[in-house]
Image 1 (cartoon, rainbow, N blue to C red):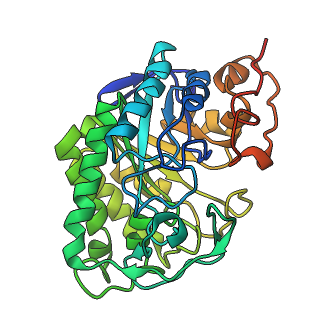
Image 2 (cartoon, rainbow, N blue to C red):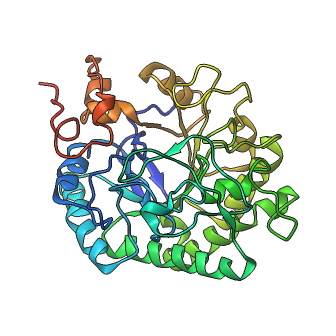
Length: 357
């Protein structure tokens, strides 16, 4: 029976344990979305993770609206990522780049463009901008003739990730961003081949995944989904009817692994009474399945030992505990993180958390 400290094969490489670092937006890149030197130290500090999944990384200016988040569409960005991947590899770690198109969750003051989405909708709440929080703007519907451009941007980003030295990519298809907006009927009101039936709403996910696999190989490709609950105003009325077929399609396409973010009724990042879909997905997706959301060491260990998951991704615990696997293994206390520094600039709350002695 495996446990969290056992290695695991993820397509084209082996992870040394099943304690993964979840993607965590930290806003330490430059205003031009170019990664900075401090990011190499941050990621290298956390190389004990079986796999590091980077903070969400923009595939284009249109798709990247978070201030000081990194991108991977330009040569300059690729060159700036290289010291980061090398720093992780030099410490024996594995790292993949999470590819991000934020869809309607951007503000034109950051991107210079109107947000895009499957349908004309406006996200609830406020967007982070360089000038503080501002209300979200109405997104325009992507035209059919724009889909090839989106596919090409994912292709270029996945190529760039490999050039930058990443072990692979994770396609961000969760959390209320572009692909999730297509998947869920609360945000997808289209009547063409990308809307309506679950088969149609899965189409963009399938096409993007297929394009990435044809570019870098399925053994280097992972996907993240968030089937249940409302995330940033993105909700599906019957998630099992779309996400179980989506997982089956990802199995058919041959992705190396799948991560699911599944909040519960007492979740700390979203709450929902919609039950997890992972038990049904487990039946149709037979490659490594990674679960994420509010796991403790104890219930993560149970999930892996009982076969409900093959690995667990931890987020906030890795912010303040760069040596999280060591702390788990030695039953050491965990340090609390400082929320005020999640998206601040500089080392404080980023690279100055202590290691266990």
